[in-house]
Image (cartoon, rainbow, N blue to C red; front, side):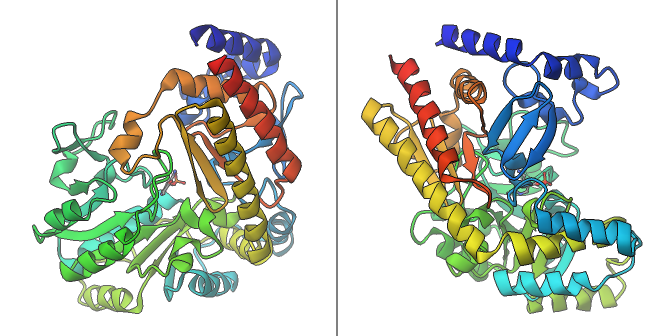
Length: 447
Ligand code: PMP
């Protein structure tokens, strides 16, 4: 195994001298990368890219890749989709005015479209899913008058302090391994349960101090861990029973369809969070509120005890800017359409079937899970039921092998996952190419 990884590392290094030069020259960057996460790419240095269109990326060494990473969902609409580029160009170069702290007419169009897709009637915009979560968590604490969040072990909702908590091996809550210098121990701000464990959720809520359950409707940041039948309904019922809000973060699970799992499965969140994909790559995010929650916030802010129009901790200078909204309008109207989702979901189904067949034929004890336009394999069988189980199946060396093997043969997988995401430009030929490379990777491993 380590011999195979060494071979792939050598192949990567010798094929990417220009990417390596970009990395070595980056003396003014912290960690030699634009953002510290980019050090996560296998091979010792990341690809530096020259061009990206649709689902293809060409690096500075001239190699072109089928991109299944798609910026870890930021580019789910494909790279530089035509309609988004045209709208952005119109906004910035023809009409003018990128950020002004003033509304444009695109905002109400996007709000109405988000209501049509996800159901909630009142929307506010951010520049990232992290900020959408952060601000919505404050509003949840405001309206309930309760201090704590309930999250699931190995969840990820962006760099939101309260969420870096896991269930430890002793069954007790503790700070997530690697949590960078938390201001307070997250056990003071947060309760945590394992995914698919309604009894643990009820025990946590019974303390009476939880403002909101914050959850993806399927875990997607520790492999994909789907909800078992009745789990999401159970969350809704328990939240209502114990006076907590249900906050659903569909930043990744929008892969389930044009209205995410919320529309597909009839979920009824009090607060909805999304980011990444909506702007076709232009930074954006949003949170949505039910009428009732919006009214409760307004009743409290009307008393002057909380400030959401200035420096009270909700909002940001560039959030809701005209550029983000023009990009979101075009992307939602013309790119991430119902037809596009049907195409992407069909391809993810084919991808999943290929991976399943190859694993079965070679009798490799891994599993693969599809969630709409996204699929991910995990180094364990059967599929994990909880975040803790899924975390236990991590294997860094195997991970590096699969990422480098595919990368060296023209397939880009997202570095934080063994995840493949389809975009409107992904083709049957791309799926077939992946299957071919995946089959070779597995054959070399077991052979
Ligand atoms: N929510 C979920 C479910 C996510 O997966 C992520 C990022 N992986 C975020 C929020 C945060 O997104 P961003 O880093 O763009 O703020």
